[in-house]
Length: 432
Length: 142
Image (tube, rainbow over all chains, first blue to last red; front, side):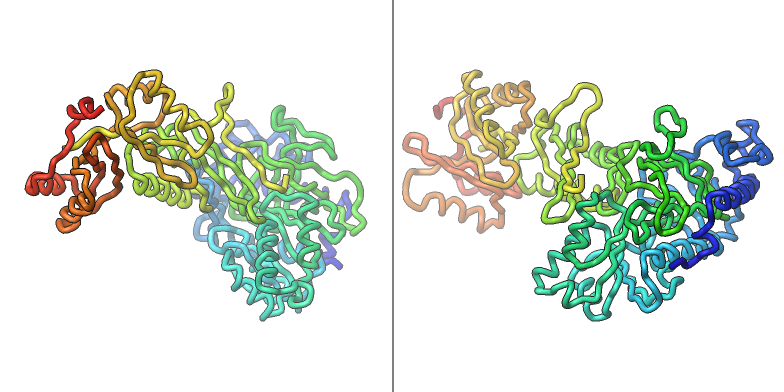
């Protein structure tokens, strides 16, 4: 039932004792990081000042901007030659963010993912197919190493090519699949087109879904369509990637591994902690990381701690499914996108005005992004050149945000204007 | 040889075409010819009219996306096959026609078009002694 019973079945006092030990060790280790060394000095703080878990609140928050400002290696707490892996986010609203890992970090990451997969009932002998993008995106390698660590035959199918994906599922007898929720729905559609009955023609029984906001109804629909149990996964590249928090078989909240992280939920306006059960911004402190420990990282994800005990016997706190963001980040097809990235691209075209509208909608169970943008002045009398402009905008946006939006030119003055802050994003996706 | 043509960016939505026409009506600008193609999201409404410069400013002041460009305008005798004869000359000279429309005015046919090689098109028109309309002739056409 437990892959790591010594960690998974810790009682609350045991968890908190372990957390304090690891926090103190982490804080001491952070003094090897130029960023944290300076931050502690600037705040007249010493590692010895952290004597209890409550003392964590003396430490200032770390933000994504800090990661950008220290790009690429300014936050590292080990010499570069000790690091063996680098992941980088697509969030290029300035510098991208870089996360370094030592070999020990990678081992611990794989252990965490393996623990999650074991928790939902997967075992050696299961065949695990991963439809995440590989490369810089942590959902690929993260699940790969974790599934291998647990001892499953692991198929790195990577993203896209749905027919090939289905061929692997049927030919290899895939029993477990990791997919973003909208892609799971897409797979079912193509199965129907190809006359594949998931219950009869595949051995799928477990689906891991995450990286994309989705509702409980959508999960149930995916389970009904594919005849599987679907478990919610939560991770972020700043913390390593997948494996931060995961649902157990109760499917009621995601256990966050408190031997790896200290969880805080704060009010994003006052920055004060909120009580369990109340929604706020998730703040995480890593207590089991070498290369780039992170103290009180503001994730910008809104969620709450589910109060009460979980029947599964684990006392690691449970997070409710993510409720949204405390910033304007869009999550589309598992990719993080900030409207400012889109704006930056659009403003480079002198043919375009400064007004635009991003619409997210579900089309044939795929989440799509449409960007309407106003022409400033008509610069041509020729359709071909307007189409060429549309293609070029689309190409540059794809390079920037990694998904292909539908670009629509509209006459100037035709987009809705709102008082004060303009509404730039309309989210009509069925998941909300 | 060329006349000024207005090109108006029109969203494929009810009322957008009317708005342009009413603005021109208020400004007492007379349409001579106009054309719009059906496309999915937007259209380019092309207009030959009296006082194109004033029409351009009128639309621009109303915050409408509009362009003013020069297009070729030939006059043809109103007889069978004259358009084919004219276009053959350009085709033989390997000049591509980007778009074209035509209309009758009095006893003359008028051919409006844009080419992918305007310099060469000018030469061809002069060398073949084709008769054409110039901007200043537009008001006399009405």
